[in-house]
Length: 254
Image 1 (cartoon, rainbow, N blue to C red):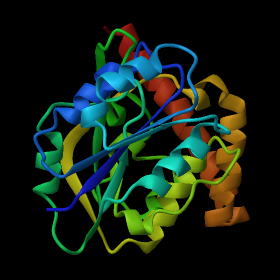
Image 2 (cartoon, helix red, strand yellow):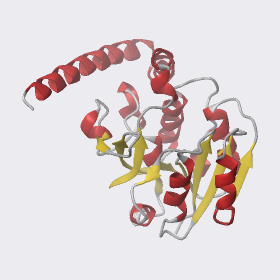
Image 3 (cartoon, rainbow, N blue to C red):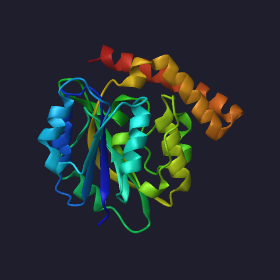
Image 4 (cartoon, one colour):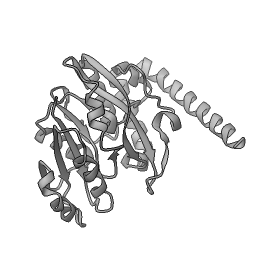
């Protein structure tokens, strides 16, 4: 069975990191290479990393230029057949997940993907991303599935490492660009039908929402063209408004 490189990026994550590490090292799937990329944390992050030193394949701690620079470092160090980013605060749904995921694998598979469960800071489940957002995971994922935004989460997207480009710098939608580039090259994309990870809501793009939207527009325009992207974003706005109306209507009857 393939080796999967699981990469955790962290900076000052002492409150989040240990549970992420445990969710990785407790996987029953045997072929896991685990890498932790720390951005020269100033809290007790390194203490936690050292506690699990024997279960981490590779770790580094040094300054970086931000999230995607750190993720590029992880890609450069990874040696597995497939890669998955499980950053500090996110966790595998259970210890059997990777075994279940790779039971769907065959030699032609270039991407395995699935669902995530959104959780709050108290680790309460809110619902899957498909259930509670406008971005629905497609049954058959292609690069054109991304025309209305990111429909699959990093924590549930497992591509073959040799297809992975570097993340573009200084762009809060670098993840969308990365996924599209991989899907343009992939042969077979397998929907595992599995909730792969718990995804902690929030994050940098949530905190810098307007900048994230501008970055997304530019990335999608680069892949889909000026005119199609303009009309696609009109659809994104209509979808968001309709979703909000439906949520308000649902809440009023609850």
